[in-house]
Length: 253
Figure 1 (cartoon, rainbow, N blue to C red):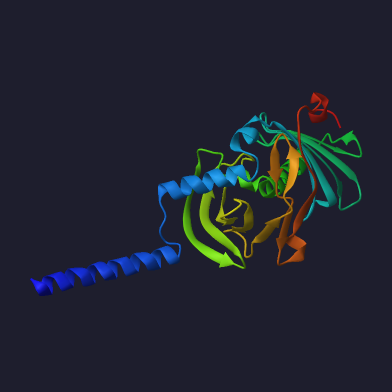
Figure 2 (tube, helix red, strand yellow):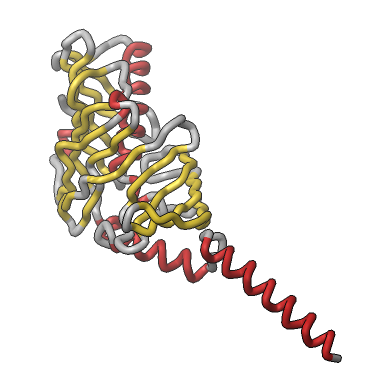
């Protein structure tokens, strides 16, 4: 009887040790933990309701690997309809405007305010600028990645970086608000709920995330994405949620 009691205590001690080690390495989580993390992530940008109620956005960005345009890229986006306007300068120093819908992929393109009348050329330009938009919008609106029925995620661990406790989240969204599928890891500050790093699975290196700014409608989004390759880094000089946009902005240059 004594031997059995000692054996049971030893087994219990071993089990508790393994459990403690798992917790220390961030390997134990629960649905409740994930719910709390999701809530904190939304709170960090002003709340899911504010995001869902916001419709119009204006933003500009510079940097990143883009072959079609140079300098600052400017967008107007209607989140509800998918309509978008792009203004920029081509590598040939020509002003280009594209009016398109990110869901249908259809639209019109203008060079120096003159509409292109070649359907093939127009389709190629609209397709390329749609791709530009999805890459840029993915970064700016990254904290809203959970706002979709197609998303799945799990906490894979925790890290202590400096004085910050970081929660590492494996995430996949097959259909984001900007109509693009993404897979990767988010490094989230456990205290503030802000994303500190984004590591997309399809790229060799990730982005340090910062520069959170109030953009209106109660929302706050990151505007600085720094990559180890400076050519891939992206910043957003302008980022604003608007109450109204004139309809002609989406159908006239």
